[in-house]
Length: 381
Image (cartoon, rainbow, N blue to C red; front, side, top):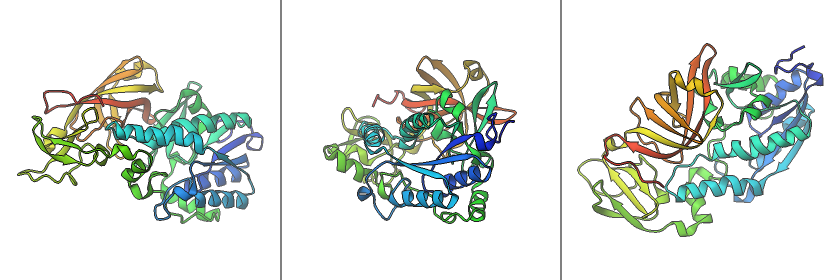
């Protein structure tokens, strides 16, 4: 028989590991797997020291979340383990985040977390437990495609998390399962209430787990205080307009906080870490028409890139028509629609449409952008 996870075993003979963050989504997944009769082991990752986390923000993987995951596991009568990955998380996610910001980029640590401690290290541990699948609460669809897993955007587009999973390898995708990809969040909470889970009404995490209340600068100041070095604010012609207190206080497209009087609103157009300067200009100069990507990951044959391709350059952004040229580990993307404020360090994810939905073809990290209203490309960061 083929069970609901697409594995040729009965549920009771299928061992699954559920990644349990302590939130409602992963808790519901654990409950569904238990209800269907699978042999379930819940695993929660401890990623940072509780004392360093603000009690005011709503983050994932904090101390209370571990307690909640343990309680859900006890209520469901499933095995539960905690993996202590603080050192790995610090080295591969927090340090990478800080390095990227100091370099004038806009990093996305949630992708790095999925790429390293979650889908690489937890994947390895799940294999060591001889589990048949690693199951998560991500809102993304997975379909079988000629014996391999193919990733698609979730049915609930407002919750779709495929943008954060572009770096998943094919080997990992073959092993992963995402039961929530076909339902919406309100239905998830109804299931949590039906299963009488103690997290049914728990608010979603809003902040990056190690960034209390969204204050990026406070994290960088703690680990790299020397990064707050004064520098020049320049216009598009290189004229000095004022000074800044550190490039880490700025992101591409930012308007507030520039503190320079002007006849028209000024926006951050470029951040140049090499000379510690901020370039500002009018909003029209935020239009980007070409991207250069590094460290691309492909989840599809190259032939699919000959079809109509769409990209996303931010998790909440819309799909944009584009043309993509793959060059070994890099890519050049021509954007066929107007899009503003794209920054190096962000991810660019490839999609195409077929009879099953909007398929993820892979993606890469934005290394450099070309502004359609400027005569020169943005400098390497």
